[in-house]
Image 1 (cartoon, helix red, strand yellow):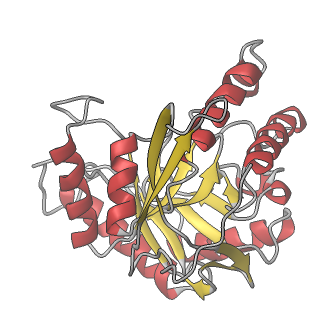
Image 2 (cartoon, helix red, strand yellow):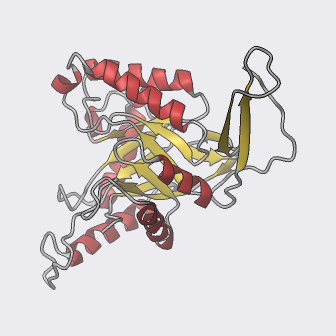
Length: 306
């Protein structure tokens, strides 16, 4: 391993996404001509989680973002670059500055675009919605180990990635499931101590794994999956976090929202209409943003590529 000190480096941030080209040459047996070379684009920044907030370069940041699936009605998962650019244009046009890669590592080209445009990224592994029985499959541990290793090693140098995530909505409410969360989080932390770790939970007061992470995250859908009042649920989520190992940690609303069928309109605002979708999202945002809980971190679960 070799270390080098660089002077006059400008930090990378959402407002100033400064990037540099890093060139590496491989010399074999003392030869004067390199046998191979590699050029990587990098950025320099620090990430911390102090006083219940997230900091980039020692400054508190406000995350306003989207959960993005690499799925499209026309191209499926085979996204061309112009469509990736269009996604980011839509996202930035709405005033957002962050993406959660729900629920798998994203295309390298999309991460390059996030580096260029100053989009914060929560990247997570492939595990989503798995029961304890599924997590106990004999191939589960090895598969997750390989995916986590590939994700971190391949994407480590992307300055836009500020959070690593694992196992969306899996069996983190069981002691057996907690062993898997602990194993995977420790694996990622051993490869990268510079980024905070999180996972998205839907287990509410039954969650057992908030003590393992740096950032607590909830998936909650008031007015869509439940009839709960968004304001009351926001306050309750903070209480759950404080009681279950997340006291003093930043808290992200990692999913919220409602479905709406394109072109389905009705003044009665029945479920599935665009009017009902807008109403639910507005109510959620009003309580999330104006309440005492989520002033800095939220990811709306809205379609981007339509």
